[in-house]
Image (spheres, rainbow, N blue to C red):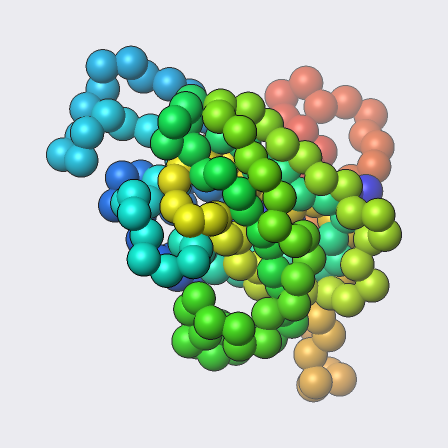
Length: 203
């Protein structure tokens, strides 16, 4: 069963970003749909439910580095939502990934080449709408981190990375691993009743 591998609910985390002057990168992985609050102002101007950077970026692109909420995962599809960003939306995006258990090393690459591999090449985005890309072939490689790039700057409300969790087995053969955990690929497929709470909460 496919899951949003960077969801904040699963434990996805923003590790670094090039800029978040107008709106915080953390909003990208909020599990609920983006909202609009007309008239709400913050010190930088109108409030937006998403990630928004300064204009006139001197670098080729702005970027945000995310650690997957699962131990690692293979990727099947990507969704970028520019809801309510109109004129200040990201014109183009791309997504890269890497398998690396050292967060500090991944963050040290910032916007440089580092060990990143292309998952989705540069794609066009438009104002205030959802964009989805299903990969022609799901990745055979597994990833622990992804970098979302937007060219050259702008705003994105939500980012979703769809795929399958893959457990990372510890070197210690005696270590205990929770095989039912959603972070390791556990999926609740059926239950007798979930009137007061969903079966997924168990994982």
